[in-house]
Image 1: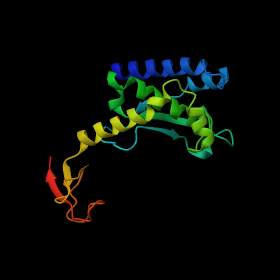
Image 2: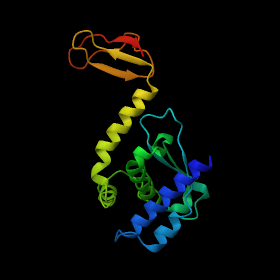
Image 3: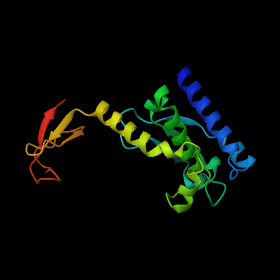
Image 4: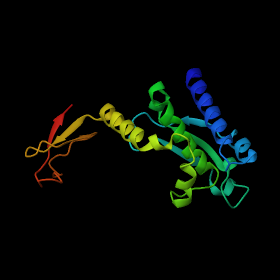
Length: 175
């Protein structure tokens, strides 16, 4: 657990140092974000790479969310691996923007997110990370007998699903 905390704290420090060089965030923003705890999502999470968990609204001292309204920011445990360090920092930055009160994924949010120096790697790294998670967590492969298209899944299709390309019933194959 010490190694986990060490990686999380190191990444948090790196993200805050990078944010200090972005001409949008104030010293107060950065000092407030220092108080945000980082934790881990469940390891079988596939579609969620990070999440900001807020305290219940009745415990907020303000009408708008801020870092003191945040219970914890959780990231996927696989992001602790060295190969995901760039993507890990992008995810932490993304969640820190939420911590500062930008809750929606809208134009304003993505404009802020675009200020991150390695943001151009987010899409590619995210897709690669998602594929890694799917391969790691999947126990079934749904295969189209007609076009050989296959989909990795955690449960059987039981003949309920059809191929988008050729409208053929998908067959289950254990991995």
